[in-house]
Length: 212
View 1 (cartoon, rainbow, N blue to C red):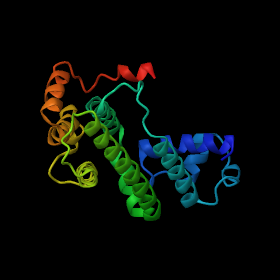
View 2: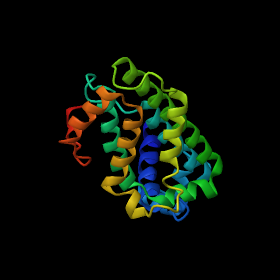
View 3: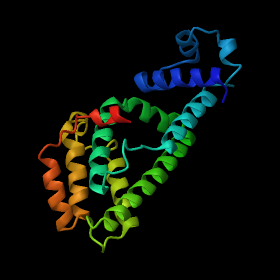
View 4: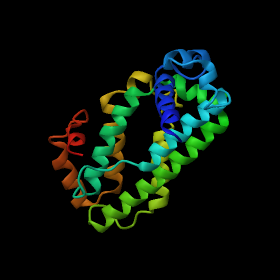
């Protein structure tokens, strides 16, 4: 992907994230970018191609993964950090974008979903193994089953009619999901460590990102 196309994809990704996909026409994209449609069509063949390239970019970012600002975090600290990041990302999500992608561009939705699940599965399993080695998690856990349960739990949030949008984008929501997840895996040593960490835990404190 050349530099000019990368700039276009970044700007379009912002547009889709903010306004959804269906409502943004190719005319809107060209106008927003300050270029002609003829120039835009030098880089993409049609809107489906443009959406596909945006999803390619999102998958690329997904595969880069989250790098903790320091390697000395233990497994429980890592999950508390992830809870902060996901809580923040959930507040920024435009559900219309997800619905549009799933309804009008199912092939791209499926590609992204598969990539996201694969990355999440790898990360959760790695965290479980790390916690077991550190003596913080129970040794009788089945990492694959636990990882898939956690993925199911998180993915079902957007497509639920049990919690309102306000509830599942609240500060408390991901806090409860991850504390529930950690407590289910932790042994007594891990629970004791968690209880101590929660004394000063603030899910909105993202200062750790500044040390990256």
